[in-house]
Image 1 (spheres, rainbow, N blue to C red):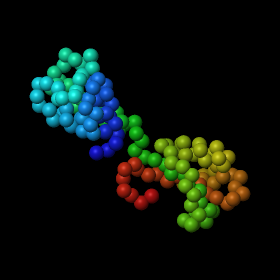
Image 2 (image 1 turned 180 degrees about the vertical axis):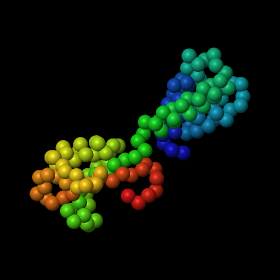
Image 3 (image 1 turned 135 degrees about the vertical axis):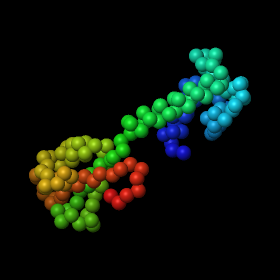
Image 4 (image 1 turned 30 degrees about the vertical axis):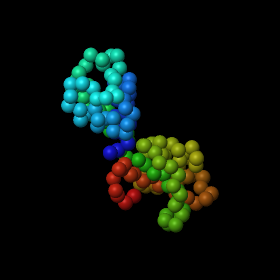
Length: 150
């Protein structure tokens, strides 16, 4: 199970319950409970005190789906890796300079470090105008959580 989902579950549990058994599987214990009473060790906070366990399970499930959808829309799907290479573009002299959530931020960071840049005819290859070290800058796009050659 991914850590974002676990953090969301912890957040929901903390929002609804004043007390839980504080076990690793509190979420599962409550969600698998089919009784009309709270499982041992669970106490709903005052604002949820009049809700039945069935209603709380439905609320927890709704909040989980809603917050996972929100997280998926907020977390960037593509990342941009800024690299410095020698002017011959050999793979022997590659320096990773950073990972960014947009190409604009990668270019901005490169400009801050190297000064004015000129494109070399492609969307993601740049060369510093003042270039005493004879380097080129590459910005490579990588998709998060996908196995692929970068």
